[in-house]
Image (cartoon, rainbow, N blue to C red; front, side, top):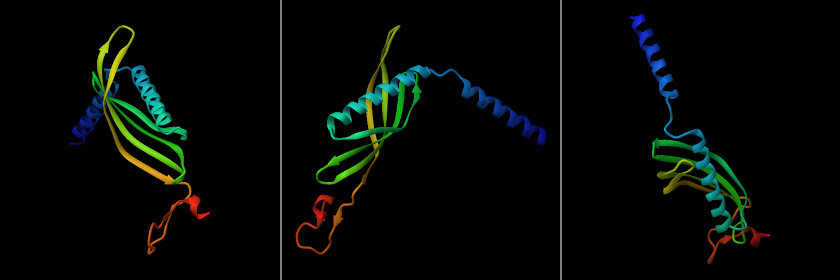
Length: 147
């Protein structure tokens, strides 16, 4: 019985090794190009939407081939933002995107960004917002009002 277990385990180990080494339908260079383009799109969007933001940092970024014509990208990035209402904040955003191949030539491959999901959005206030309960009126005070 031990021999059968060893043979089965060895077969499973070799089979999984071959699966991991199998040819990917999308090259590593293509994955890198997709990641760089998506990072550029996100960077431009943040800079345009929040011009006072700074220190944009991509914490995680990877892509997976779902099909030979479909790629799913996963990302997490953060940046600092300054507003008069809330003071300095650190924004963290996690999400994913689905891209489909629409055209391929000898030199280029064109992908369409068909789906974008934001799974998690976190805001860390650098200076806490003060909330006073039991007052008549607005009990929320920004950091600027408390100094």
